[in-house]
Length: 376
Image (cartoon, rainbow, N blue to C red; front, side, top):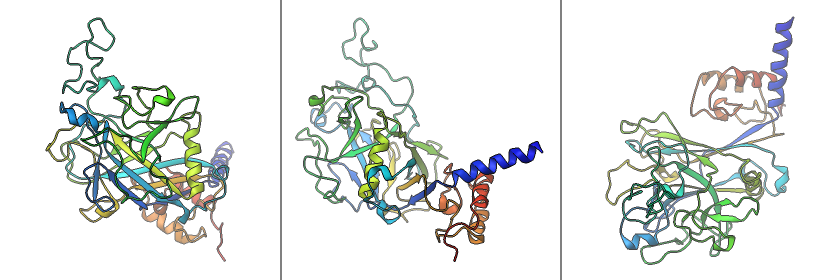
């Protein structure tokens, strides 16, 4: 009897989970490599993320610290009705995946690095004096980074004073720092200031620019997500691989969640992907993260555009794998065909609980939802 009670409890919990629904957006509306020397904005097949720090070239100090940036936007109104008011969107999770080119060799770092672990004075040496920041005799204000590499970061996308989220497109003229003049980005990667909710520019967080009105100079922003490579072996990677970003919606007193609620209300979700990984001019291919844009699909097997998955509570039938509005044998057939799939599984494959695999937990959700929806 105890076993049956326990099993019934599990099924009840899974049935409750079926009130959540995942919406998948496999192709962006816009994706753009935001870099001053991208001469084919909106059509370039790949975009890399890297820093301008540590070049030792005076003119390069005018470039933004986060120099190579990828901006992505999805039209969410195709699946999620826009204009209902931000509170109508009970977001449970937001997951974004980008696909890196093959032959990658950059080191994996999953922890954000303090601003003073970079080459702040741009002399091509990090902590050239060998003395930790703040210790007696410290002359350059820098400290060594404890682990190799730099993380891939995801932030919100802010707009202004030139563009708004309504009039910017992937082919809009570049606005940002160049070799001739320092300037803030537009659109710009941002985080919310703790307490005030002010949007802080992070494109020059190491050099401490553009946030003077908020009383902020050099600082270490907390990314909304850090990219986690899946199935990646640095230096021995013959195929493309996924980098997954699981958004921390609780950051900034819940303002990150509110950002995405407002984006869904407007029908478009914007994010910016960056990294402060150091690079050199004419360096080796693969030494920095480089992601496929939607125009790059087909360049090599496994190439894929940036993908957005949003899980909302109180959605339609969670067991509707094939999207026809009814949970039936057709959905079960799709799930069974993908059973055991791991890593890149999505709702269209039968991953109903959003944990990137198709297993018994997903089957239980489908069975508890069987026959629901518009099956007339």
